[in-house]
Amino acid sequence: MTFEGIEGVGKSTQVALAAEWLRGRGLDVLTTREPGGTRLAEELRRLLLDCDHEHIAGTTELLLLFAARASHVAERIVPALERGQWVLCDRFTDATRAYQGGGRGLPAALIEQLAAIAHPGLSPDLTVLLDAPPELALARARIRSSHPDRFEQEDLGFFARVRAEYLAIAAREPRRLRTVDATAGVEAVTRAVAAVLGALLAASGR
Ligand SMILES: Nc1ncnc2c1ncn2[C@@H]1O[C@H](COP(=O)(O)OP(=O)(O)OP(=O)(O)O)[C@@H](O)[C@H]1O
Ligand SMILES: [Mg+2]
Image 1 (cartoon, rainbow, N blue to C red):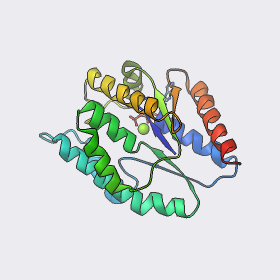
Image 2: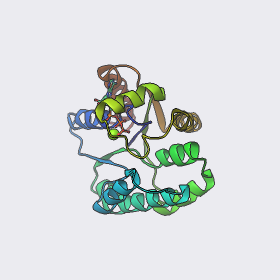
Image 3: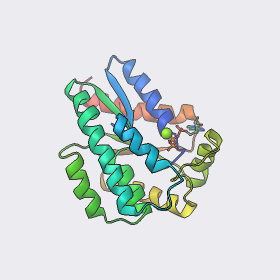
């Protein structure tokens, strides 16, 4: 299961609350995040978010993201799934589709080729898309930290394209992606996410 959306929309908050909710129902849950999740991938995350680079070309960024993802999938996600754990991941390949595809304009076919290499046959059972206008989400992210990372330094136009791509993916795959209005307060968003999780549990017979 993955959580997606632009910066500051509330992914990390909701991943933690969803894990608590599922554990309360007796499920064995692993929470993790992207880019990251293994030592190598966390190192790549640090490099990707660092603002001190002269410039990172779009394809360089894309390859680093998928290198991190390949490590994360092989070393952490697949072993957890094989142990029978529920994996909750803060961002996954939809983020690459939205940011590097929608935001940076890299070809969708290239992203899908790399996804097929990094996680052949593996895609989330369910994706919660937290949706809010960039102005609102970025304001939340700025309250949380006063040091914007390399992505947070992008302009509103960039985040508008990223959001539009996320919504386009949700329209294409309505069974996998569930869009939740993230403009409401934490409690209301948490209730909406719990409703989605409850439906998933009911469908899986738990
Ligand atoms: N529904 C909400 N209403 C108001 N504030 C919220 C809501 N959800 C989260 N927040 C707050 O907004 C900030 C950003 O939330 P959070 O870190 O969960 O977002 P995120 O999507 O993980 O961001 P990033 O992409 O930068 O990691 C935090 O300070 C959090 O407490
Ligand atoms: Mg976060």
